[in-house]
Length: 114
Image (cartoon, rainbow, N blue to C red):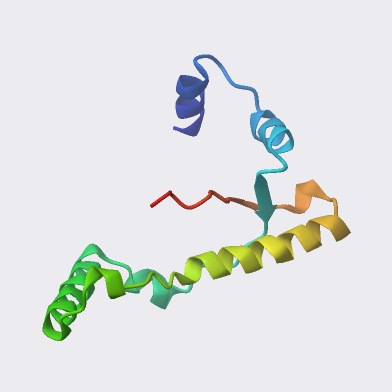
C-alpha cells in the first residue's frame, strides 16, 4: 500500500532509500526520535462520540455563562509539548548523530494565521 502511494505521489517508481534521502534533504525541518507506545486507556478514550459529547457540553457551558468569543483563549497544551519535544530532540541529536537509531518522525508546522 505505501509503495503504491509513494509511487503515485512521486509520479514514478521510488527507491528503498527514499525515506533516508528525504530525511537528509529536510533535516532542518524534520525531527526523528524513538517514541513510547500509546497508553491503551488513552487510546480507548479517543472516539468521535466522546469528542461530540465533550464539545456539546462545552457549548452549553459557554451559552449558560454568556461567554463572548472575545473573552475566549486557546490554551493548547500541544504547542508546549511540541516545544519541549523540539528542544529535547535537538539536544539529543546534537549529542548523538546515529540516524539509524531514530524511529518516529515529527513534522513541526507553524500555526495557521488567524
